[in-house]
Image (spheres, rainbow, N blue to C red):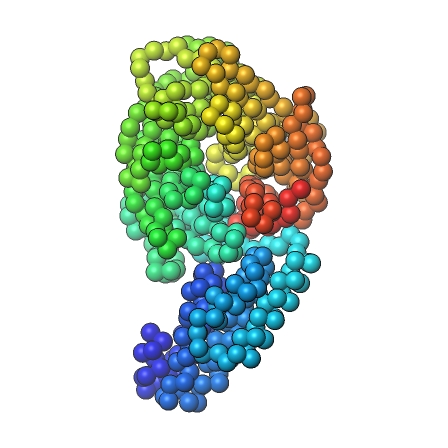
Length: 474
C-alpha cells in the first residue's frame, strides 16, 4: 500500500497511512515495526516524494524511537534493539545509527534504575462499556498470559515484548454479532462472557469456554498457534451443560489434551479439533459427607501425565479425587484424598471459575495453591503412591479478619505469592502454616490474577479491568 501511494498522483496519502500505522504498531512485534518504518525511510527517496521526503524520514525515525523506548522497558539488550529496528536497512547513515545505539543504551540504563510497578492496559480492543476480565490462564514456559472478557473477547499478553494481540473469536461463533473494527485483519465479535481459559506450557493451544449465566449450553472453542505466533480459530461448537462448565489446563503428553466438565460429566478432549476421548460421569452427593462411593461437587480439575494414559485430579468439597485415567469403568469405588479446602472465587472477584495454581515437581509430587470463597489462601503437596499410602500435606494462612486474598500463584516449590488489596505477600510453606516472609505495597485496583515471569524475575498482576502491572519478585 505504501509503494502504491508513493507512486500515485496524491502521495500525501502516504502520511495518513504512516499515522494509521503508528497506533497499530504500538502493540506489534518490534521486527514488524522496524520493517515498516525502514521501508518508509527508503521510499522517501522516491522522486515523486521530494516535497514530503524530510517529513516522511522524520516520522519514520520517530516511530523507530518510540519502539526503541518500549523495547528498552522490556530489558532487551540495547545492541539487539538497534540491530532489529535499524541494522537491516541501508536507509540510515552510520551517524544516525550510532546515535540511536547510544540513546538505546541510556534508555535501558534509565529504565533499570527507575523501574517500578508499571501499568498498561491489555484490553485496547474492547468496544462499548468498561472491560471486565472473567477468565485468565498462563503458559509457564513462554510466559504468555491470556485474558477473557465479559464481552466474549480474548487477548494474549506477552510480557517479554509487551505485545497485546486479540485472538480471532469470530466469525464462526453462531450466537454472537459483529461488534468492532478490524484489528490485525480480524474482526472482533461480541458474544457470551468467557468463563474459562486453558493453555499448555508453550501456549501452542488455547481452549476457551463462553457461557451466559444459567444457560443450558456453553460455547467450546480452540485456537491453534500459527508459525508467526498468531492464532487461528480451529474449533467452535456448543455443548450441553448443567451448571457452570470448567476446563482443566491443557496437558501436552503424546499430543495436546484438555478436560471439560459439563456438570455431571468430565470429558477428555484431544488435539486442536477437541476430539472426544474418554469420559467420567458422576452425580454429586447431596450431603457434606463423602466416601469412595459418593462424589462431592467438583469445581476444578487438572490433567496429569501417566505412562500409558492421561490421568486426572478433581477437586471439590474439601477433597481431591485422583484418577489414573478419565474412563468410566462401571466401578463406583474410587479413593478420595482429604485436602481440607475447596478452591473458590474470592468475594468481589470478576472471575467466573475458581483459580488454581499447580506445580508438578516430579512424577509423584504435585503442589496446589488456591483461595477459598472466604479469601483464605491454601497450599497442598500431594505425594502419590501406587498403594493407599498417598501423602497429603496442607498449609494455610490465618483466617482473614478483614481483607482476604484476591489472587495467588506458586512461584517455586513451597513458595507462594498472595495478593490482597494494597499489598503482595510472599509466603513460604512451614510445617504448620503459610508464613509471610515479606510483603510489597502496591497501588493496584481490583487484582484477580497473578503469574510469575521468570525471564525478568517479575510478578505480573492482572486487574478486573484488564490492567497489567509488573513488580520484582522476592
